[in-house]
Image (tube, rainbow over all chains, first blue to last red; front, side):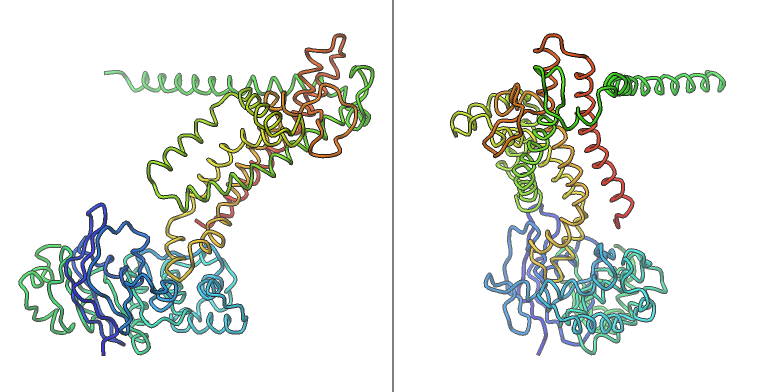
Amino acid sequence: MNKISIQNYSLQYSDGTESLRNISLEIPANQITVVFGPAGGGKSSLLRVLNRLNDLADVIHQEGNVYLDSVDILSNKLDVINLRRQVGMVFARPVVLPFSIRQNLTYGLEVAGEKDTERLNYAVENSLHKAALWEEVKDRLDDPAIALSGGQQQRLCLARVLALEPEVILLDEPTSGLDPISTGKVEASLQDLKRDYTIILVPHSVQQAARTADLAVFLLQGELVETARGEVMFTNPQDQRTEDYIQGRFG
Amino acid sequence: MKSSHMRHRQQQFGFSLLTLMTLFTVIPIAGVVIYILILGTPAINWEFLTGFPREGMRAGGIWPAIVGTFYLTLGTSVFAVPFGIGAAIYLSEYASDNRATQLIRIAIINLAGIPSVVYGLFGLGLFVLFLNFGTSILAGSLTLSIMTLPVIISTTEEALRAVPQAFRTVSISVGATKWQTIRRIVLPQALPGILTGVILGLERAAGETAPILFTVAAFFLPRLPNSPLDATMALPYHLYVISTQVPGMPIKIQYGTALVLLVFVLSMNIIATSIRSRARARRQW
């Protein structure tokens, strides 16, 4: 049973910039699904469908179906707040909230009404462990989060998502601003995390896609060109366009 | 081609000219302050600050006017602050960018350009006469509020917009509602900017004469107001009265009153400026 099922999904924004055309895709649980392709192909849009962050954007047309555990997440009746706790998102630039490290992690729980200090403290420690940040910040949890380095901030953003104990984690070019060492740490965390979560990653390079993908999805100008297991996609792509992109002939 | 020496001289000349122009803008302000300080300071003593006017205002103190201006500033803030901030939150965070909101924005900008005496007449018509509040602190505060609103709305909106959009997106993405996002992140981050705007708006209200002329200010009322429906003396109007309407007025008292008003307004300004610069130093974005 797949975690997420996208069926004949199309999307159009009012400014006509990015759009998705008739996308059908099955996303398996406990794997890293990598959605890659050139800029403007609809990768971010696709992620933002899955946590309904597109509600904030000017969407003029939408059709098709998207199911998470066979729940229709496009439904008007869906509890969007609850969906966003189930489907966490890490953005391209690390955005720490203007609070302390601790408050960055408890924020999502607090807005959901959690007041129990013990549970909040547990969430802080647990999420920092999972994001491989605990050792570096355990003595300064009440310092402003902005004081962390870029790589640490991005892992804090990952921890902030993990603190909500989501089921799906969306990562939109999470390492685009990071140095290779920090990038390596984030990628290593993802490999650990996929045991417990369904991970959907928009990589910042084809190389990262090849390194991380269990399942790879190639998006080109809003169209899904090809879906394949990672090891197949990057060695033996079926579509000429996929091969050209992977070989670096365009992009 | 000009020699580099020549270009250097030109540059020197340009800088000197700009420095001079800057100085010329400061000189009148400094001049006014120093002039009022010199002429006004001799009047300042305990009786002047806390006493009631006597002998047709030619002696005694200005306590009722100080209290009146304080009450009016307070009253203005009671009405203008919640409405102004509320409107700004709506415009910046909720309203979609359509014709109606554009119209509202234009209206607010134009509201700021209306001469203050027009506000005074409007207040007279609406609050004093139509709503029958009489010449009262209530009517005066409401009139000053309407005049202050555009300042508070536009500075608050600006402060809200300065808060990075990414904070809102992140907050929504971890399951916060829009209102939670505003209350827990946007408002606290914008607060110093909002406070600065509020104080600057109130400062203008405290110093205005025309809007209170017909709505609240008493020519001579040597007692303190008991309720919001009482008229009151106020510093700017009192200054106008003793400068133009009372023959044989000691010049010392005129400048003493001006000095008190100036200190009142300047100290609000200093508070606003220091809030702003402190917040800038602490800001995490």
